[in-house]
Length: 401
Image (cartoon, rainbow, N blue to C red; front, top):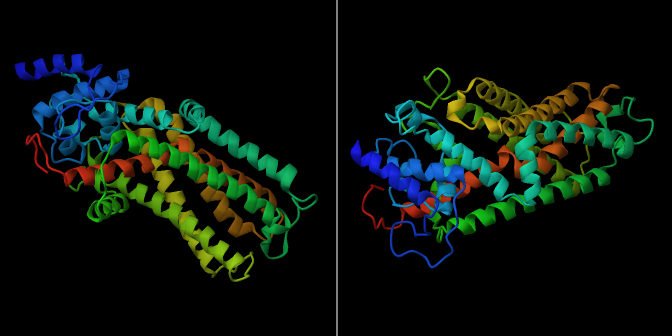
């Protein structure tokens, strides 16, 4: 106990002036010391204490990575925060959690830093700060505004209240115009995410990636390995029970999104390579993929919203709820309107529903670099760094690989 108290005092001194020391020990890099924010300093404090205890070392990738470090500069804190999957297992098991005087709450401390990294690495940075503060409002207002713009400016006069034979979307919104709009928004999202993750990757200085490290990362991403709580029983939710619900709802969301993306990609190939133009039959591949994806994007986000509403605020960052719920709301609107279009595509309700659907899709892609989608990109980068680091010698020899 005395040793842990001493480490706590030392961590508070180190937190604001941690040098840039390479992972695994060695001499400090001759680089400028970057002061820590209060949220980063709190993670540094808690990691110093966890490094002396190590009860949670087998729970996830965070704690083995922690054991390779004696100090926690800004880049390492951002790396560990994005490596954390917020499963809650360490908080559930921690003997030093509140009301203990050490007040360890690793999931909450890591969540706060993650939220900061999304805004800090965002490009343009002002967009990230705006979405972080007002995610739900921005998401829904952007979707409604874009739907109105499409309906009043892009839509062909007189077609917004008329049924179209076969459910022909392009009789309402010209194909080339939509392709130009969606192409520009998609390119912006890719560039903005690429700039952000490149900055993050450069700061954490991961080293060269081997094929084995890339393969391990892909497996952990696709299987959501670290949402099993380290023991296979899942996360701790509001009642402290273990459950795999969050992992399963994430899978519905991720694979539903990918199925919808695949539907769009296949439809693009049909249009430009095969000369097969929409609307497509209900048993066509684009429609089947879109339907499966839409169902996944209803089940997954609805479940995640349910968990978000009842999740113990001590296990996350309540300040990020607007950002989280903004992303979930857009996914639900996209899925509901997309499936609705299948049901009403040959009657007079289709044009206005199409405008709402397209507005929500554009808003979703425009906000991808600034909301919860970005955490998947940063977390993938952190998992790759972890996989690379595991294959390097641990010069400290204080933890196991």
